[in-house]
Length: 109
Image (tube, rainbow, N blue to C red; front, side, top):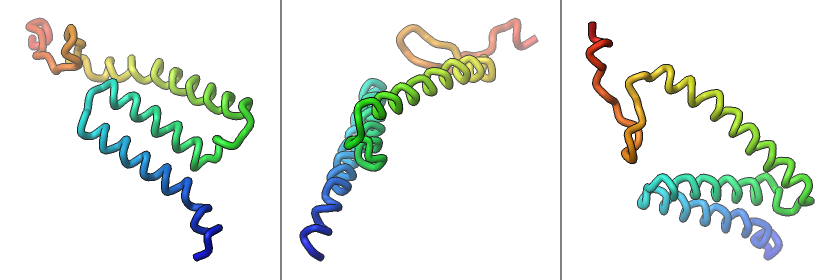
């Protein structure tokens, strides 16, 4: 292979290696904050390298970013209440996260 062919793939291999390191860190650390940060970083790296947004004008980058954030907020607003309605036994405990609670006595009758 020539030097131009090898150097053309270098950014993609670099991005792949960074994604691999972030994924391994997410698996071994596993806290919710690290998972959220890792997913955000991975999405940004994929958009920058593989969707070629890293070399675009700032206006296009911001319009894609705003569109993704608005759609994410829209889906969360629509899906979280629906999921809570479908699973009434799951309630938020103070500081512990989601736990399945036993049915109340009024529900068993």
